[in-house]
Image 1 (cartoon, rainbow, N blue to C red):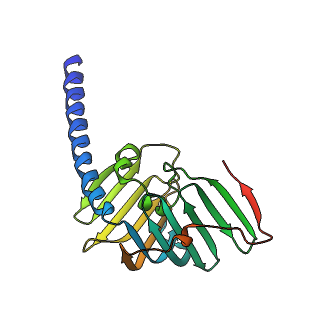
Image 2: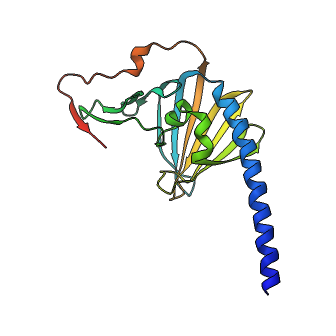
Image 3: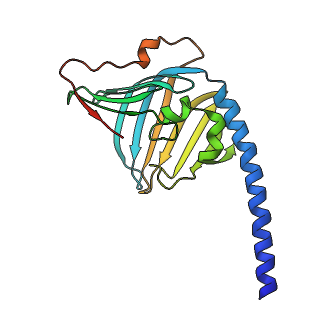
Length: 206
């Protein structure tokens, strides 16, 4: 029994090393694709599906991303909402409630695809296990148990990013489909700044 355990342990160690080598290569491939996007803007469609395949919510909007951490993520319908990063703070503004929540910018936070896309891809391997599932699709599994999702799928078509899907612990999947993408074109800096409108309640988060 002892010898069998040693064989099994040895096989598992070899498999782990092989997996780490494969993941390292896959991280490099994904990083190479993402690093080519110095800026990225366009329209998005967001769809939330439960574990039975039923659509729970759909929304649409526009986005502007610029490395190393600037983003303007604006939901237009069905309810307006704005998420902005100026590399110092992250602002979440709800115009219907006349309320904005501001918190310090943190590269390790990944509640939105904007943070992954606009962040430092060289640090990706520290946060995710990356596996290239097809020529154009990658699976990212967070190493931290505190993330808001259990798996992230990133898909490209003809070298362009077309969608991201996040699955949570309840089996729900949120898919972001990117449309009318514009790549590596200058973006006005004022889009990454936020000044609360007069009368807005400002909530400071940690």
